[in-house]
Length: 122
Image (cartoon, rainbow, N blue to C red; front, side, top):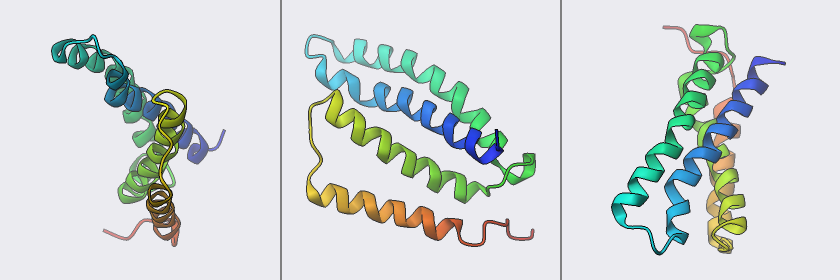
């Protein structure tokens, strides 16, 4: 599997965990704030176990194809896709047209960031 694809898949998996950690508690009306924080931290742990390898595998210093800024922009775009699915499927909240317009602008940022994918000399 190409490193770029493995990186994106790991970023996607990590974002599923983080989105769940950040937003699932909103539907849990009986949870106390402390319970929401504790459960969110437990859900977030696997996110770090996926995010760190994704960034290491994907970064140019470790043989990957992406610079750190490119990894960040990819991660943000993946977050928006995962969040949109989560928002509709779990929270039952449909994004507004202006939300989609904002998402498109972030996805456009990914395209701009990928121009000249070679890392700048140090």
